Each structure stands twice: as C-alpha cells, then as structure tokens.
Image 1 (cartoon, rainbow, N blue to C red):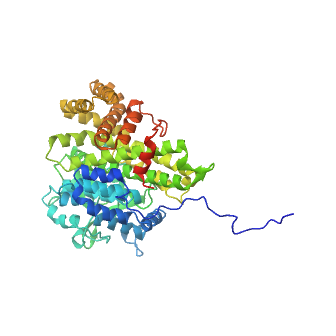
Image 2: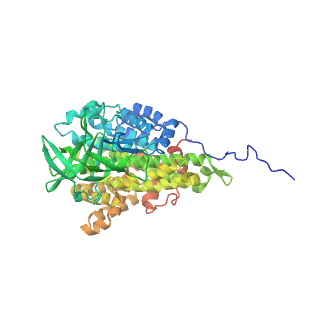
Length: 547
C-alpha cells in the first residue's frame, strides 16, 4: 500500500496566469496611436511613447494596487487639540499625482495651448487611467476649473502654480507653493444633482470676498488647495473660489465631518464638510453659478468618457492576457471559439470607445469652430451616457473571463469592477445625460438634423446606418414628453451612428464591418459575444493586444 506523503509538487501552480509584463501602453494600443495621429496630436507622439513606456512598467501596477489597499485617514485635530482637517494618504498617492503633473494633464492644454493639446491630454489620460484611476479625480477638476478661473482679474495670482508641472503636496497657502490643485464642492444632502435646491448661502464680506455658510455632502479631493463651490447669493446661485488657506497663519473654516466610505478606488478621498466662516471669491457673474458649472461640467464629462474608456481598455487587455495563459478543458481559453467571440467583441467595444473619445478631444482643440463646438455640446453627454454604461458591462464580462480569480481582491479585476460605476454617476447620471442631449439638440436646431442626415448620406451603401439615422431623426421630432421617454434610445443611436461613421472611415475593414453588423444591423444586442464576428475575431484580438 502506497504511503501518502506531502510533496513540494502538491501545490504547484502551473496553470496560474502571470501578471502583465512591462509594456508600452501607447505602442501596444493601435486604436490609440491611430487616433492621436488622425485627430491632430501627432506632434506629441514622442512624449506619449515615453510616458506609455513608464506607465506600462509593472512596478507602477504594483504601487497602484498598494495605494488602493490603504484608504486615506482623516486627522481633524493635531495632538494639542487645534483643528487642522488634514487627510493623510499612502505615500504612493503623491507618486501618481507627480506623474500626472509631469505629463501636464492638470492644465497644460489650457495654460499653454498648442496644436493637438487636448488630443494629447486625452491620450495621456487614457493611459494613466488604465493604471490608477483615483489620482485622476483632482487632475480632472483642476483642469476643468482653469478656463473658468482664467476670466477673473485675480487669475494672475494662480496661473504660475496651475502651469507648474511639479506636484507639490505640502499643506500651506498657495502663494508659498510651486503648484496647486482645485477641487469641487457642489452637491448637498437634500439635492444631489438638483443644484437649484442648494441652501448654502453667501454674504458679502467686503473687498471682493464673500462669507459662505452651509455644508457640502460631496467634497471631492479635500486636500486640494482650493475648491469651487456653489452657494446662494440673494435669490440665485453663484460660484465661489474657496481657498484652503487664507494666509500663512489661518486656515479657511472648512471643517471635514467625515470621509466617504465609497465603493470605488481607495486611493482618493471624498468628504462631507461644514462651513465655519468660510471665505471665498465669486467666479463668474452673480447669480450665474449654475451656468458657470454647466460649462465646467462639459469638461469634466469629457474626462468621464476618457476614464471609462481607460477602464474598458485595461479590462480587455487583462482578459486577453488571461485567456492566452490559462488552460481549461484541454486547451487555452483563447483557442476556444466562444471565448474568442466574447474577447473579440470586448476588443471591438474598446476600440469604438477610444476612437470616439479622441474625436471628442479634437473638438476641444478647436474652440473657434462653430461646428466643432456644436458637436462637442451634443456628443459629450451622449458619449458619457453610452461609454460609461458599456464600460460597466464590459468590465464585468472581463472579470468573468478570469473566473473566480477575478473576484478576488488580490488581482486587478475587482478594483476595475469597483471603479467602473463612478463615471456613469459622477457629473450627472445616465438620465441627466440623456436629457442634456435633448437640450443640446434643441439648441442646435436644424444643424443637428443636417449633420445626422449627412452621416447616413456619406455611407449610403450601409442600410443599417440609414435606419439608425432615420430612427434618431424621428426621435428628435417627437413632442417634449414623448421625446423624454425615448431619450436613452436617442442618445444610444447618436453615439452608435458616430462610432460607426468613424470606424468605417478610419479603422481596418474587419473592425468597421464587425461593428456595423453587431451594433447596428443586428439591433444592437447588449450581451458581449452574442453576435458572431466570424473571421474578424483573429484580427480584432491581435489588434487589441499583440501576442
């Protein structure tokens, strides 16, 4: 009788998947490279290639995992009992913000605009977001605040710090720092997205300053050097710039009540705050605070599209990498026909999202063009609605490729999955975005219908595009109540129509054909892998992640 004994071979893990190796996030992403060149960012390619190499290093992936295991900690008081309202972060938090600042993602496209600057920033964002998403929150808000602050007479005091590419984590007055960040504090307990219900108020304190009283239910990036806040000024709402420090001896009266225990990343912090004699300066015209913030939202919503496209891309890369290394039922997952269909469909979704995001970024590079600004106005909320929704489904599907290993926090998929919902909620949920699409279409008038019809005319040999265009135009002609009931269909059709147009004109034939057949001609099935992509699957997988 054989004697059972333990062996060093008993627990060999010869069918476990290794972590992603060092790679270049720019050079391994064909859709990203093609889009940067096509949309006017080709002069930035050397820098993007260099940053793609750095961001693709395995040590950064490990650091991102580490900082998302150590949640920020609030220190409301120092050891002597003085109120300080400081949030302590993992040391790696500063590393990722330093990388983002060095890339100029926090403001260079506004401070030092040049050809293709927003396209290049979008490419940087798409790469950084694949590695660590939490650090993008303060980057987005700082960037979006700059065009608003730039109109103020006192902007010269801030410009050198906003232009600096050296991140400065020190908690001190802006005048003593090398750089700065700007956060946001808009929503309150009683209203959420309904900003007109805000009850915090502002009263003049003299010399251009106002005293704010009230609270904020979501106070993003609480250690930023200043925040833009909304408060009532008389009968209407105004926007205010509220610094963290008033001078070298005095902090502003922003009292952090607690940090949010949020679903997504653990690296960043969001807080609830109350005001105790807070001082701020008005931004924009009195009583026009909501209009000011609508403009800011058009910039932050663009970053929601980029952030979700980045999560989608990383999920697809992780899924393909896993399938190439994992064996089941006698062969690699990647060699099994149904798995190939699912992966190819996910790769197709990722390319369509990246292509759309870079096209939107080009519109931000051309503020002088009425047609580009009309496109930006109607397509940004539609893209935020659709790409963020699709990323949610796609990341879940990518996790499923990993099986049980994907459900465990030790690996990357759980963090991607927890992060995926935020961009669909932040800066307006899906319904808010779809209503904004309707509002933008009404403002554009005949220009919107002409552009939609023109897309179908360009591709007259594609009946699925014509059918989608006709349904979209019919939806835009409905009365107000009926139109609102169809708002999600309208936003979906708009995005799919633009994505199909872009891919038909610029992507390889296997990509565009697969997209039109699976998203338009088939009726747009929502389950990845349900539409057979046949021979296109091989090309799609090679293009998505080189073997």
